Image (cartoon, rainbow, N blue to C red; front, top):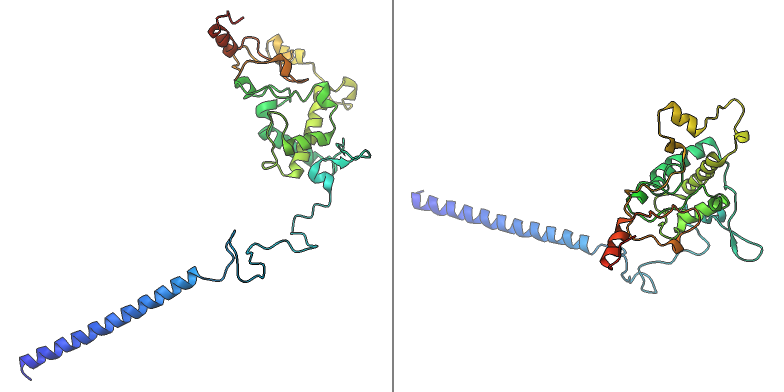
Length: 268
């Protein structure tokens, strides 16, 4: 075999290898394309789209009659709503927890209250939380006569649906936590207004004035709290829109003074 014949044979082998490689590549591409198409067109229900599988053409299916999804059997309506059907046909609130008020419940309510409630209502519930002192609308004083007279489920209902400027906390607090917070609010109210005769035997009671003296605190420590003069209201307070128990409006409101000056007055 001469060199010319040997070169022709090598070229033929190379061409054959190229042809086989090209055919194999095409087959692989076809296989991959087929798999990808199958993934796109797999039989599944896509939300908000129709379906040929069901006779009514709808992909979303109605709930099966006489069935309840797991975890959604709300048999205790009072536990989930905080209201009952009254004898007059209207919804009524009750001064009752749907479960025993144990120490664990109060501790849980204390923890949740400090997280979600104190920014507005403060740790003692007087409505003078930190964000109120920085311009937010004054919150309700949970220790006044109006709030103490409210039934327990009232607080559950307010946390569920919101009230006035207060948003609802249904997303942050599940029903059991809302009841725990309501129980703690009642305990907090009792602690702020309980007579000395209600204190259990063996427990020492100290007056705030004595506590202030022992710790070298100013006499104002034992006085009712109020908004500091440096607090900036978000808008001028309106006396007519106040609610019983709400923190008093700050008389030295810089916003009100500035608006008075702009109107040509003295701002006083």
